[in-house]
Length: 219
Image (tube, rainbow, N blue to C red; front, side):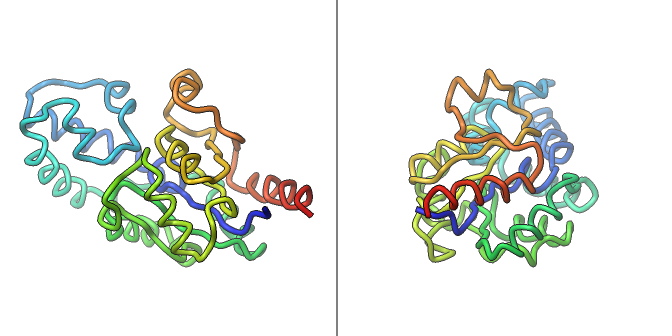
């Protein structure tokens, strides 16, 4: 089946929010558990829903930590999010191919839209599936299934692109081909312990070559 759409994760894939996320996690955890947590301890849970991430550090205070996290994150968001170098050019290339595009994220769709707007790439994304649109979350298949449905495609007509193994586990279980970005904070070892991507890309425009190759073989 030919590829007609791409389901993107947001943070760490389209939007460089590493500084924002790590700083917000550290401020939140320091406030509640009064402990300095390493970047590596945080990164291993990125891609999971926020409450689940925070519950790994203190399950009893997870709900309060989520609220604190969101307030601080909202305050610092626009100052700290940055673009990845290849993202805009890659999205334009996909747009020129007529490829449909949706974002499937574990954050709220409102904050996802805000990040896209700050970086001026919102016009290239037709739909957003956030945590509020799902009852189950990554690595479950539901978010990617809803992402494909939102752009009127079947999962096997879509590529799932992410920086976290949880993104790709969701995509693969939904029936998508999976692509890991080479700018992920996860090491190859951490990735391979959970999933082996179908492809790895060095820049977003590499998707164009992959889609053309797949579609030529399907003809």
